Length: 463
Image (tube, rainbow, N blue to C red; front, side):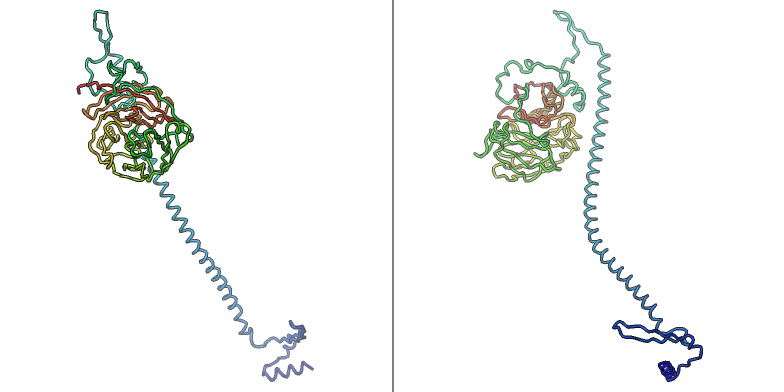
């Protein structure tokens, strides 16, 4: 009964139903999702090739696909934004590290060029020395008759205050230092054995060991006693020590006396307000004087108040490897104290590497007066002041070397010396004078040592 009724409905809808439509009709019987039975009758349209409504599905599928792609792009943009901020911070850190590496590379390049220059200079001087040695071998010795026979004489009749050879010839000085043996009995003229005044250096005794540093930070260092302490807190027995190996040297150790130093028991540790450069510090009248790291700035640190008392730039002074001693270590500026006050030992570009000595005001650090010597700073291992005279040490590694030069600020005259000096531990990085103890304090390859010295009346040599 359902077929006629359905055909009737088709006629009501004015849909023509040709006879062949019946051949293409189909009937399907199935349950819906609720379990109810449904009959579905399907007839192909005789006129429409496709239903207009069904064309929306491909469009909807396309829109859905594009929305999915858009969502993916938005997610990627959000992730990239967060990542870019992270990368931005990372790039800033990378730039900082790169800049630091570049600065270090440039510094290493400068150090390399400086060392290459020194090597070339030493090679040139070695060639000059070889020529001089050859000429001396070819020169016959002069014979002079005396009542006792013949005497070999190969020295000039007079001694010049400044020898003919250049003081810059470090190889020549070092060779003299190693082969010359001078008995101590010949170093002190008659009448000088009990000399107590301010005179010229006559001899340096053997080193006396007081302590050996415990760690690598103590390979180089500064140790001394204040010759003129101020106030009751510290005395002339108080020992001060600074280990100078490290990037940020600030710790100043105070020991009650030599005995406590030898036992390794400091009574106090002070922290300096500015980092220290190298081993050129000194003690004088209740203050530590030192050079600030990577600068030509001098600092006076008051030990009682534990504060910075004054600071001043040393005009035109080389620093951080421009004019060091022969062992390097950024020893461009060496401060010293003696019977006549405070001194700075350094060089400038104007002096072309020759040692400059300046007397300083101990409170303000102003330069009072300066002298330029003819001894090149990078050809000597160390220097110290005694009674207003500059003395230099020829080698820092040779076990038996010499104090090879003296410059008197009273006369402005310098001359060669050959006073024996021992580097017992083969790497002497600091020599300083205490005019009350009348001793040299030195730091020799982890070892803190002192040398007794003998002074005598100055031997006046005309210039």
